[in-house]
Amino acid sequence: MSAGGGTRAIIAALLANLGIAVTKLVAWLLTGSSSMLAEAVHSLADSGNQALLLVGGRRALRIATPQHPFGYGRERYIYAFIVSIVLFSVGGLFALYEAYHKWKDPHGIDHHQWVPVAVLLVAIALESFSFRTAIVESNHVRGKASWAQFVRRAKAPELPVVLLEDLGALLGLIFALVGVSMTLVTGDGRWDAAGTAAIGLLLVTIAVILAMETKSLLLGEGASPEDVGRIERAITEGSEVERIIHMRTLHLGPEELLVAAKIAVQPSASAEGLARDIDAVESRIRSALPIARVIYLEPDIYSARRESPSEGADPATASESGGEG
Image 1 (cartoon, rainbow, N blue to C red):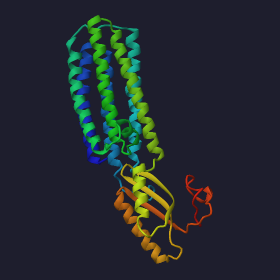
Image 2 (image 1 turned 180 degrees about the vertical axis):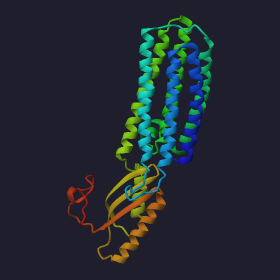
Image 3 (image 1 turned 90 degrees about the vertical axis):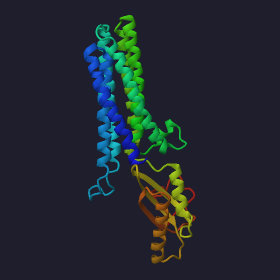
């Protein structure tokens, strides 16, 4: 994902949510609708979340230090995880709390009855614009993956977060519109409470999905199968390497990948020749996959004996390869 595309989607969502939050708060003050209050808090939480994503993206650009030699790229994952917590607590739990109180003390909308409907329709239009921007930017990097696969596999957290937030916002607005409309028609405030509860359950569900996905990124994910294939071809397409004994990859950030591999080389290779060959292999890897910023290649002599897992072999290939340590 390009940083610019993610930033455009975040800014579009931020501007839309700030405007929507203000109008929803005004509608709540005029009507006392719990759906309006839940949606106003939801929009404020989303606005704060988009600000967090922008801060995380900026802080991730800091250069590496002796204390953090691999840089700060994964800070974007930390801020995305915080977003899921905010969405769960400030958005979802507050809406469920408000729904409970409205259900215990239901009351209709007696004043300015047209206000919440008008506000919700305008909000749906603005949120649709934000959602469309996120879809357009995501399509630039999604490729042939389904939307579910894109959310699960994306290494850059911003677009999946904005996509899920905007989808949740649109569904929440529809729930609120149904709840408010039924309250106006029937005069029963429990419809408003039901709409508020639906919003709360929706936000909690989205927050849990975001937390699970960003937790995986925080723990450290390897390169995608497609990127692993590119790296393997880059290593073995020259005459310098006989085979890959084992390899590990790790995303240090969305656009920064660590590659560590033990490679089998010719037994007769000199130290000078090895250094030259390794430089050539590293150059091919970076050409094939520019995000491979940190590369460690360990030359070894391949033998038919098995390399025990304790010697650092890949458990998936230890039964068929080995290395002289």
